[in-house]
Image (cartoon, rainbow, N blue to C red; front, side, top):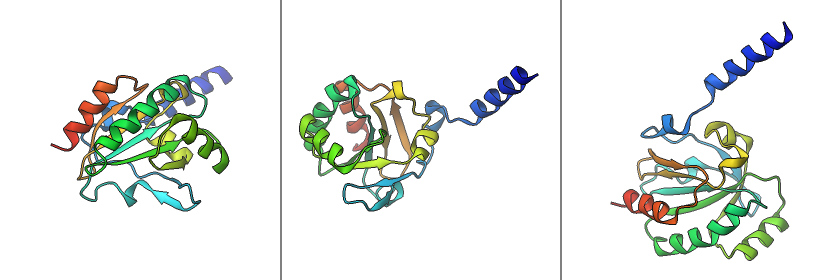
Length: 163
């Protein structure tokens, strides 16, 4: 009986988890975090305000993230006047660790310490990072890339946002 209950509970919870594909062309889900100064910030502070937003979820210690973030930083610099780029960190970390990671990875865009609501809202699992959410100027999700490693596709998605 206990196994049946656990199975049913798992099925019920899974049914309510967002599938990234189901979020395309829908309004972004507002999530919160702390910026590098410790201020509480929300995605709605920047998304849907007339400028596209690229949200790069990442984790400290993830090999793929460490390979891709410096390159995303270069792409972000290229389009810095046309997009807002933020990097919510899904790892439990402190300010010192964030500063060290940014220095090691050579990236400059803002890091947020993400809340668990980001993981739930966008159904992010540890194996999904880096996970990138592309939000147009009106606040609509245009694409979500999980385990985003293809830099050409990342830049192509950014170009599509600024058309």
